[in-house]
Image 1 (cartoon, rainbow, N blue to C red):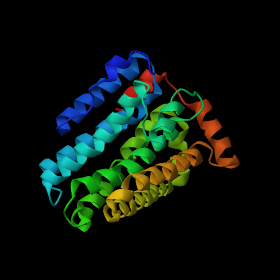
Image 2: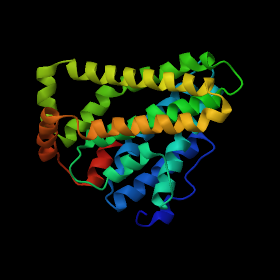
Image 3: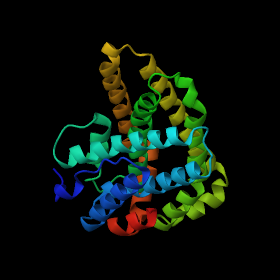
Image 4: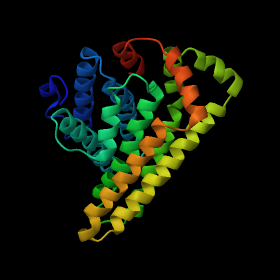
Amino acid sequence: MLPYAEDLTNLQASTIDGVIQSLDRILVWAKKHKSRIGYFPALYRRVTIRVKEGIARGEFEDGPRMERLDILFANRYLEALEHYAQGKACSESWKRTFIVTQRRMPIVLQHLMLGMNAHINLDLGISAQQTVTGQPIESIQKDFYHINDILISMIREVKGDLAKIWPILRLLDVFAGKGGTYLATMGLKVSRGFAWNTTKNFSESPQEEYEERVQRTDQTVAKIAENILVPGYLLSVLILFIRLGERGSVDKIISKLE
C-alpha cells in the first residue's frame, strides 16, 4: 500500500473535467509525499487537456465518441493506481510501472515511457474496443490515429521541460538537430500501431477468449517495460550519465512536467 492511500480513492471519473480533477488530486498527493508516481500524471494531464480542446474545436470525426474513449481510457489508469495504492491487484504492466517509482535510479524519461507503455500498449486497445462495441472497429481508426498527431505536436514542449530537469539535453539537441524529435515521433507511431493491432485483436476475440487475450497482452507489455528499464549496456551507461545530471527534488520535477 502507498502512504495515505485514502487520498487516492474514488479516482474514476464520468467526464473529462472529472478526469482532470482526479489527475490534480494525484499530483497534490505525489508532491506532498515526493513520489515519482506523479511524473506520468503530470504529463497525462497536459495530454487530456489538449484532447479536450481538440474535441471542442471539432478536430475529431465524432467528438462525443472521442470523449467516451478519453474517459474509458483514463479510468483504466485511475483504477490501476487506486488498486495499487490500496494493495489490490492491478495489471502487471501498471504494477511494474508503479513499483519502479520507488527506485532512485530510473531517469525521468524512463518513468514517463513506462507509464506510456502500460497506458498506450494495453489500456488504449481495450478502451477503444469498448468504445465502439457493436460497431465496426474501423469506424474509430481515424480519430484513434489523430491522437498520434496531438502527441507528436507536444514532443518539443515536453523536451523543453526535460531540458529543465537535465540541462545537458539542450546541448545534445544542438548536435542531434531534429534527430531526437524524429526518434520520439517514430517511437510514438510504433506504439500506436501496436495499440491499434491490439484493438483489432480484442474486437475480433470471441467472448470466451477475451480475458485470456487481455492477460497475454498484459504480459507482453510488461516485458516491454523490462526492456525500457534495462535497454542494454551502452544505453544503460547513458542513462546513468543522465541520472547523475538530473536536477531538482521529486516535487519540483513534477511541477516542471505539469
